[in-house]
Amino acid sequence: MLLGATMLFSACGGNSENAEGGSSLSGSIQIDGSSTVYPITEAVAEEFRAEAPDVKVTVGVSGTGGGMKKFTRGDIDIVDASRQMKPSEDSLAQANGITYVELSVAYDGLTVVVHPENDWVKDITVAELKKIWEPAAQGTIKKWNQIRPEWPDKELHLYGPGVESGTYDYFTEAVVGESHSSRGDYTASEDDNVLVQGVSTDPYALGFFGFAYFEENQSKLKAVPVDDMDDSNGKGAILPSLETVKDGSYAPLSRPLYIYVNSKATARPEVITFINFYLDNAGELSQEVGYIPLPDELYKEQKQKFEQFAKGAQK
Image 1 (tube, rainbow, N blue to C red):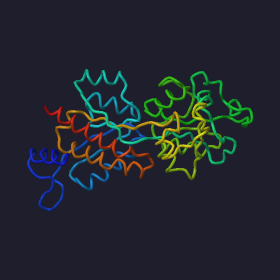
Image 2 (cartoon, one colour):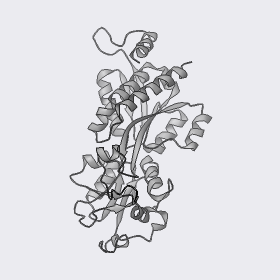
Image 3 (cartoon, rainbow, N blue to C red):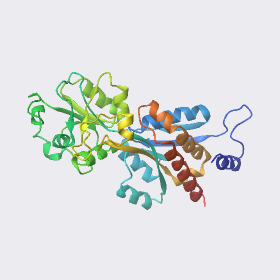
Image 4 (cartoon, rainbow, N blue to C red):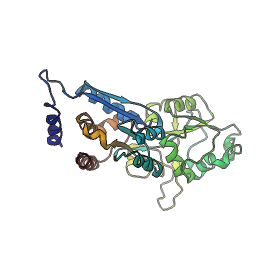
């Protein structure tokens, strides 16, 4: 890979370092998409800026759905995604002559959270989450004691990602049984920090978002153990953690996180170098920002996958 990168640098008129010892790479890289993947990509971009200060890396946050719209139109080079690309999005990409590669970069555990003063929710089942979030719950499931009779006769206030979010898509598919299907009477935001603020200031709130945002704010939130009620595992309610997400016991709310790269962008050496830098550093940096790294061998596989894709794209 280093040899390939060197050849690309040479083809573009020089070595990867200039006379002052800095990178000779220049240009810009446009990234947008998932708020969940954003902390990883921004951490990688920050480290990369130190290595290649003349490359402008811009990382936006418009949700997976919003990022996919831009990506499939060809407006950005890379999209952050907390779910896989949908068939409808793939069709749009094909219609616009865009080919791409999907790369896994980390794991996440969607985290169900309540206010720290909530002393009645010790755990929750997937069936109970469905009862709360399914479309039929709108205007019907309004109080905590409608979930379990022993819970308070108090209003239930819900917070969750907006409908453009891949986190919303994944949660609704895993919990409700159909992607993009839920009640609409909840406080929604594409900005996870808004959801954190909402739950952390509301004793009767319940919300969900990516594990990293819980980790960053665990002093003012309480994570709820989730029981998938699968008698075959016999593990009961499980909290999300590095260990439980990696070993799959935190089910069904564990998931992989992705980036997608436009083939046309791989003609530019700064993009090739950035993606290799990303995959070299994603394990360490994803853990630093609260996510779960892939095994080392999977990062190697992703690098090989990208190398083959980039070679094919340039033919």
